[in-house]
Length: 453
Ligand code: PFF
Image (cartoon, rainbow, N blue to C red; front, top):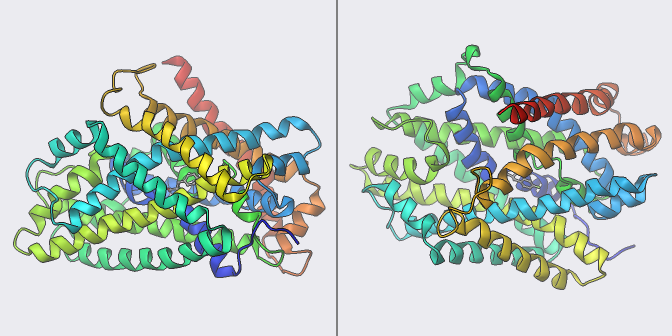
C-alpha cells in the first residue's frame, strides 16, 4: 500500500513505544527529581499525572498518528480543517531536534562511563572532580556524543521493521533483565530499608506547587508525549492494533521502570554514609561511582558487575529513546522533501551534531555564554520540558477531543467497533476536558511564577 514501513507485531509496537518512553528520563532524571522533591510524595503526584494527563495525551497521539498515516506536520495538514494546526506539528519537529541535541550529550557521558566501567577505570577518588573535568573538556564529550548519534543513525536508516522494531525487541528485554538483576543486588545492600522507606512512605507536607510542576514535566518527558513522537510511531501501526491497550502497556512499563530505577539507586545511596539523595544531575555520574567503590570495597568483582550493568542499562535506555526522537525529524524531512530515508536521516544526524555540539560545549568553553543565567543546554532542556511539551500536550488532546470528528475518534479507539471497551466514555472525557484543562492550569501557574520572578 505504501513504502513507509510498518510495525510487524503487537509486541514490536509495545517494545518500540516503551523503548521511546523508557530512557534517561526514567533512570537518570526520575531518581534525580525524586531525590530533590521529597521521595514518595513526588512519586504519588507523578502517578496521578501519568494516569489523568499523560495517558490521554498518549492515546490522542496514537489516534492522530494512525488515522493520518504520516509524519506529525502532515498529520495536522491532513486531518485539521484550519492550516494553523500545522504549527503544533512544526513545534513537535523542533522539539525533536532540541531534545535529542541535549539528550545525546548526556547519552555520550553514559557511553564514556560504560566504557570506563567495562575497562574497570571508574575512579574511586574524587568522582565529582573527575566528572567535572570530563564534561568541561572540549573534545572528549564531543567524541562520545558523536559515537552515540552514529549508533542512533545506524538504527534509524534501517527503517521501521528492520531497524526500530527489530532493535527495540532486542534491547528492551535485555534492559528489563538488567533492571531486575540490579534491583535484586541493590535491595541486598545495607541501606535498603532506608531506601525503601524513602521511596514508599509519602510525606504529603512535601507536596508544594514546585513539586507538582516538576512531576508534570517529568511525566510528559518520561512518556515522550506532547511532541508527536508517539504519533509518528503510530503512523506505522496497523489498523488492528489496540491503541488504548498499547498505551496502557507503555505507561505501565515506563512507570514501573522509573520506580525500579529508584529501587536500584536509593538503597545503594543509603548504604554509604555521607552521601546525599538530592545530589541533582550528578547523582548517577558522581554519587553512584562513589557508592560503587565504597559499598563494594570488599567485593570488587560485584562492584565491577554492578557498575558495568548499570551504565549498559542507561545506554540501552538512551538509545531506544533517541531513535524515536530522530524518527520524528527523519519522517518529516523525508516525506516533506521527498528524500530517501537514508538521505533524510543523514541530514537530520548532521543537524544533531551541530546542535549537540553547542549543548556539549556549554559545560566547557561556552559555559559563560548564558541568557538569563542559562546555557544553551539549559535552554534546550527548559524550553522543551517546561514549554513545548505541555503546550503540545494541550493542543494534541484538544485536537483529538474536539477537532477530530467524534466518530473518527471512537472508531480509532475501538477499531471500528470491533474492540469492546469499558471506560470509553471516561477516556473521551479525560481527552476532552481533564488533560487540556489540567495541563493548562499547571502550565499557566508556571508562566505566572516566571513573570513574577
Ligand atoms: N521519554 C524519554 C526518556 O524518558 O528518556 C525521553 C523522550 C523521548 C522525550 C522521546 C521525548 C521524546 F519525544
